[in-house]
Structure formats: C-alpha cells, structure tokens
Image (cartoon, rainbow, N blue to C red; front, side, top):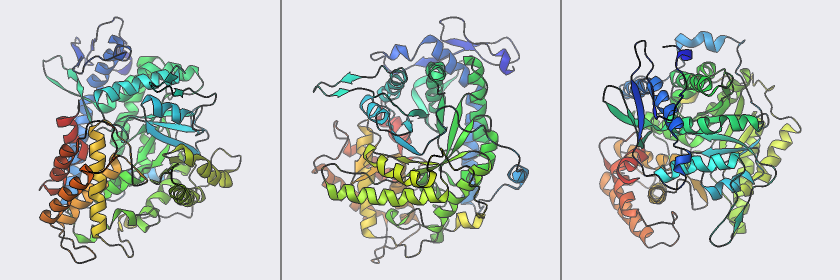
Length: 561
C-alpha cells in the first residue's frame, strides 16, 4: 500500500488498518502500564491508532536493521574492520547535494542545554537563557512508565506555556518570557517500550519500539502547536549505526507528516554521531535524511562507549586507558570531530559540539571555578574548530559557553561558510586508538565502579542524569565505565602498578565499592536505595562471559515499571 493510501483514523477506536495490498485487518496498541493522573490526555484513542500505524509500517524494518547491527558486530569480532563504504562513494564525492538545514527557531544554536523532562528540570531549562533545549527522553531518562508518559505530558504543557507550578514547599516555577527552541530526543532504535504492546492482526504480539512510541506521541500531540508558535517539530536521533537506520527515520517522518497533514520536510532532525559505525557514514546519513535534516552532533561519551564496545575483543592494541585520560584532544577523537564539522558544512548542516561533563557547585566556589575553566577550554576549542553550537548540562555554565562562541561567531548565527577544506581524515585516523602516556590505574578501576554503581542506583530509582563527584553522569558515561572493566578483564590487562585485572579482583572491588556507598550520605536518586540490584547488574555486565550490548536493557526488563 502506498503512503497516500494509509488513511488517518476517523473514529475513536485504538485500531488501525495494517498496510497491505489486500483487505486490511485491524492491529492495535495494548496498554499494559497503569493509567495515572492525566495519562489519558497522551494515550488517546487517536494517538494509539497513530502508534499502531507506525508499527504496522516500520516495526519489521526496525527488527531487520537491529539484526544487521548484530551481524556487523560479529564480523568485526571475526577480524573485519571499519572503512568508508565503497558502494556509496558517489554520494560522498558529489559536491552538489545539501540537506534541508535549520527550521524556524534553529538558525542560531550556539548554546544548547540538555536535561530530562520532569517538570522542575523543564522549567529550569526553559528559563536558562539557552538557545535550544534538548528535552532528553533517552540517556538522561530512566524509562519508568511514569517518566515516559509524564515526560510527554510535561512537553505538552511546556509547549503551550501551561507548566507553571508551585511545589509542596511553596517554591514557584514559572516560565519566563523568552524560552529556547525545543528539540526532543526519543529513545534509540534498540530500546523497547514494555508497557505498550503491539497486537498484530494474525494474533501475534510484541513489545513496541521506544523510538516509535516516543517520537510518535511527541509528533502527534505537538507538531501543529509547535508550527503555530513559529517553530516546528524537531528531534535529536540517538545511537544510529548506519545510513539505512537514518533512511528508516526519514520514512517515519514522511509517513507522520502525511498522517498529521503537515508539509513534507516540516519535521527536522539532528543526528547524534555517537557510534563508531556512524562515523564512517556521516555523508550517507545526511543524504538519507536530507529533506528532514538540520545537522549532526558529536556525541562524545556514547562515541567512546561505542569504540570500546566494537573493539572489546580485538586485542590489547585497541584497549583504551582510564576514562579521564580520554580527552577530546587525543588524536582519534580529534579526527572524529574534525570530520564531523567538515562533513556538515559541505552539506549545509549545523555541527553541534558535545557536552563537557564538568558541572559547577553553588556551595563550593573552587569546584565552580574549575568547572567553568574546563568548560571554557573545551568550548573555545569547539568554536575555533568550526562548530556552530554546543551542549551544556547546567544553566550556570551558559554565560561562559556563550562568551566563547560569541567571540568566534559575533553576530552570525553559525559558521556554515567555514568548509574546513584543510581537513583530510582517513579511516586509519579514526581507528588509531593510541593515547600517548595513557595508562590503566587502580584509581581508574575504582572510579569506574563507583560511577557505575551510583548511576545504576539512581537510574533504578527513576533518575537518569546524576551529578557524581562534580561530573554529570548519564547512561553513556555509565556504559563507558562498565565496558572498560569488561574489556580490561577479558584482554588480560595490567594496571600501571602491575596488578593483573582479573574477575576475582574486580568482584572484590565492586563489593567494597557497594559497601562504601551503602554508608555514604546523599548518593543521589532520592528514593529507596536500589544498591543491591545495582551491584548485581554491574557484576553481571562486567564479570560475565558475554558482553551485554547495553547496560540498561536487563535493568529495564527486570527492575523498572
């Protein structure tokens, strides 16, 4: 069935017609999670019909692409290596094509603030003075049912400026006059939504796609309102590993635009280049999304995780040192960001920098001074390299970051004219993981364990972004921590001090770390401690024979509701 033949729903039924050449049979989305206050405003019959239509059309392709991911990883484990695809050289070599570029409200993106979509953080982000708010439904989200649908409600209210509230303690949260453009980040293709189930016409059923649920609900409820307010429905797309995955998103957007009755190209996406496979397909990803693409982002922390994950069993030469030695100035990270800027600007796309993890502490001027200095240094480099904007994780960092980009941009909204023709990045540059002076230390092992345990404890309590030791940690940094531990064990590494990194010793360190945290005040989360489950999950991820593709997958399936 063609796109124009798939009609929008005309009744309040949650069933919709399955695309196909024969007489359509009904499919529907079954709600398994409880209906909490106002959830019915998001999970309307019409919205559920839209979600069913998205799964009719795209669920099978999603599954095929995830299988292709796994097969590619197996080929890397077997000795294959990443390279630029010869069959798409014509796309890379053609200088004439461009992407759609910035939509209304996205012309100037020099400072973007990231954060979860609970009501307090939403008001703070909207009042922060940033140009863009990345409303994060992914790495900064613990996907409890309350968080997933509650976040949709929060965005619905914020877009309509109905989000003002007063806490039980009497603190007022009210939107200011000027607010940033919202760009929503749904979950990646690999993540399911277990509280909604896709029921097929043939009697089979499966879990819904977190991507289709998140993006579908956001577009269904807000696209028209955002357009009416002079912006548009904008998304950040996480964890892509291929141009084929970008093409699937492009087809989802085209389908959604037709269903919702909005012009083709209204939806605009910024793709996070945060996996090693995607770094070799930047041009192709832009090309597949060209009618809907605004830019690319250098998702540095997930990129490091992806590098470790892809090469976890490829020998000691591809083992990285302690996380705090993996700065943006090491050669392979420089190659990645330089390639991103030059690729974007050749195609008329914004290049958005990544997030420095340092955050200020209003109770400790010394910590704040150090954080501001580190962030200034990082953002000065990005602006000089040609990035058009960047991320911050805390409102107090915005003035310093804005000053660094203002110094380069002046009154210009971006620097797309800087084509960076001096950049010539090869596959060897992206794959050269040598870090001069890099070392694995006992302190690095303990820090990885501490971060992973504290983050998982908070994540299981429903909090997806956590300040730990004056750094903002989310799922990406927790993934780096546990994947390094697994790789160091399985590659038989030694610490700088000469200590063999073996399972028994790491298990001992995990137990000791859990004991220390159990007695420590204020470790985050705010709810009932989930440290025992966090410890169990970390041991499984680090000490097991198999490497879990994502740390939070088992945690979501077994522990979150």
